[in-house]
Every structure is written in structure tokens, then in C-alpha cells.
Length: 198
Image (cartoon, rainbow, N blue to C red; front, side, top):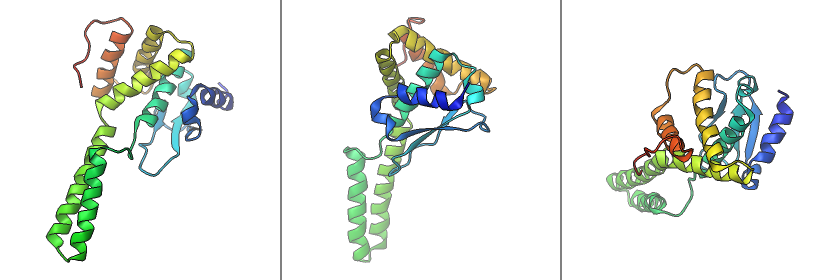
């Protein structure tokens, strides 16, 4: 597989909204087939690292849907969106500043702890099963716009999760991967047992 042509193909596959921020980088030394760093606040560039020697062991449809899923996950992670967590952080910082100016150490610590709770809440939302399932669903929707049927897209994503685990030498899937696989089995018509509402 020629790396540059595959990078160009994948760049054209991703949605236009991701092309400015998502960059694909060949990383032959990594153990994982495809990997990303968790996007931190303020960092607009999202990097996807691919070991193309392992990547070529997946079928083209599996590669397509898996790649779209990674891109969708990167787009789902949001640090700055107006919600209660942002309000908690802002309120904690403002109160902390006032308490600091007044010389109240305990008040400053309490206000900063409040901000910390808001940050932890955002971190948990960005690492939740709900976000994982949403990223899968977004990828399947994009795949349908790229010519895949809903069931074929779900089957290929399901197969890619299981195949990647084998390629990477993992004997079992993580809990989140198991939940995602069950959801994908339902979407592809392979199972009638869905996952509980998150």
C-alpha cells in the first residue's frame, strides 16, 4: 500500500468540516493500527497516526468506516460549548479571583475546587460511552453519504473493531468496545438485544 495515496484517499473520505483540523500521519513504529491523542482544549489540530503496514490488513470498507469513526470521535470531543459545566468553571474562577483579592485562602481553594469539578465533569463527558456510541452513529451516517448501506456500514465497523484487536495481538476487547460491538450488531441486524439507554 502506497502511504501517500492512501492518505490522500482518506483525506477526501472525511467530511469537509474535519479537513482543516484533522491531519493523518504515518507512524510505522506504533503497535496500534490507528491511534489518536486525546484532543486537549485550545488545540485545534487533531492528529491521526496510522501504521500502514498493519492498516493494509483490513479490507477497504473496514478501513473506510474505521477511519470515519475516528474522525467522528475527534469531532465529538468538545471542551468549549455552553452548558452547566462551563458555568461551574467560570463561576469558580470568578469567585476564586474575588476571594484571592480579599486574601481568603479557604474561599480561594473552595472556588478553585468548584472549577476543578467542572473540568472533571467535562473530561468525563468527553470520555463517556455515550460519546463513543455517538461517534459510531455519526460515522455510519457519513458512510451512508459515501455510498455504504446502513447495515453494511455497521457490519464493517463491527468487523474492523474485532479485526484490529486481533492484528494488535489483544486477546479481548475493552468494555467500551464490547458495548459498541453490541450496538453495532443491533444496527446491522445481527442481534435483537440492544444496549441499555445511557
